[in-house]
Length: 330
Image (cartoon, rainbow, N blue to C red):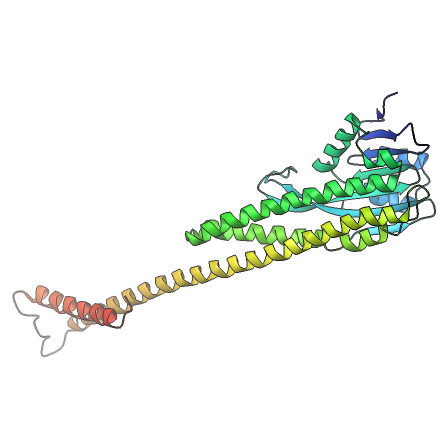
């Protein structure tokens, strides 16, 4: 009897059953849930309509949620995913956004409802289709352990995104030092956006996992739950510490970029000021010699008056440049 069953276009079922155990787990994964999928859950399970409506909502929840009901636990969690410029979720240079997943977990079942297809979740589901025997949930026959394994895979994917951030920070550092201002600004802006989004997504995971550590289970002991969910808690702490370090590095890069930009801007303004002062002085000389005074202007009636005036202007300009050089403004 096959463990995998395709219930509909968006609904896939997987039975994780160990013949040596009396308990088994059904994992239902529903991608992009809509009205047909919600109706399927409404008929098969006694979930609250408000929670089912949240699963089919087009907009993401603003915060993680965990609700303990009588026969199940309802959870909303957000995880960071990378999207490229066209909006496709994949591991590539791009922007990090929040992907929402709702979970219904109870005795013998776990239902996952990602708001959009999420690579690491689908990859893990496909892996389970091929080999359920390697799963901890196969060994224990517990939906709580299956949830632990799913969260573990999603958190490890977050590590991969942090590694991408570290590579991008190294690239940005080289570009900033090479003084490529236009490219530096774009990279630093994208890095800051990604770090802010990741921090916002991950900041509440610790509290949710702490609540999951005290779940009641008739199959698995509390010591095992604390052990496995404690590992997830440590992962969230490590992720947060890495985010803090990366945030500090990006702020240093931003400060360096601003210092270099201000230095270049100061140089440009200095050169423009020197040109302005020099040429305005020369323009003043030209304006003086253009005055039609009654007694006549000096040199005006000379045969080479143009070249004499031009020479005076050149000497004044040269004197000003020598003065600027002496003051070390050049």
